[in-house]
Image 1 (tube, helix red, strand yellow):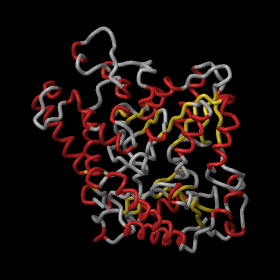
Image 2 (image 1 turned 90 degrees about the vertical axis):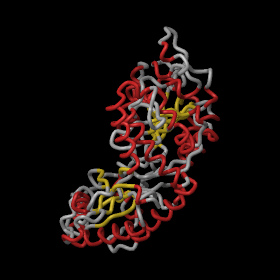
Image 3 (image 1 turned 30 degrees about the horizontal axis):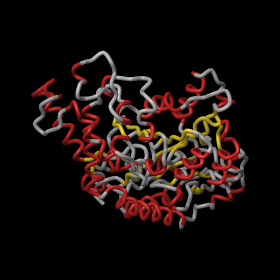
Length: 448
């Protein structure tokens, strides 16, 4: 645990108005790294160094740098770390762009519909930006999203997808599927999809396979090269702690080397040996880095670099993942001990059919919650999604506001879900225990 490497907001800063004055400046219980990771102190130092270089050297910082980080190859500082985090070769990753822009870039390469093989297979309720991207890419090819986008939904009475159901759809409809494109970890439920099995099944049916790793990179161990995933994209401001709107990244399996060329080329993907000679003909860098378009933001890149140094110090995912499992399991265990906890099976069917009629408990004003994230550690990362009951009557917002007043920061997903994520680089067992205790206190005071 490397908590000392991070700046933690105080209780007072996050709205901890229910706490005694002497606790106002104490660190809050921050369990929101799945939405925005905390500031690594080294990231702040590096950004300030680059501001100083900018002020003192201006354009010369591209080629001469007092700290040896010439801006013309700043992304190369990041690539080795990213390769290790996603289980890839360095030539297979590129630090660049933003998540959805990279998704469009990769779909332009790998979504190649024909008259018979044209569908995109994804999870139902994928992150909205992904859904928008899928629909717009399909429309660009003159297809109807209602026909071309194939969504896999949980079974009735369940919140998460079964591996067998995903593989069955691929097996039965594979001849019509051009692209299998799932999240690594589902943003709403926190389910870690069986990525290796999905990729293997897709390849067996002749489908392209990609993943959105926004909630997976820096959270769970990945082996994209060995799994033979065709491509992946990610952001870096969640578990990678690069800062709001931080620079993103992408991966392309090196089996595509020489088989696909950038359709939307830019000068930063050109061979660095002649890039600044400005030749008229594009000569791409080998592998994923040939997909780069514009020079990356130096400030955003070194902010990410500062965070990745903490991952290196921690031993990367081989050492981080066991601690993550321990913390998430502890938080789960404490929540299961709550008198307000309701087993998921008792509420799932009612919730999924949209039944919001009053129940005996809701008429009495009795709140409650269940956990819709898988209980198996191998099927989740550092996140638990809590569904609050009765459904649709505003319990979640009351609980969320109450948590903040006690200095506990989670993430709200309206109308009824709060996500809590104990990030292993900076969260502690005490954070998990306190969050569960505060949840109990808040629910004791909440009425439907």
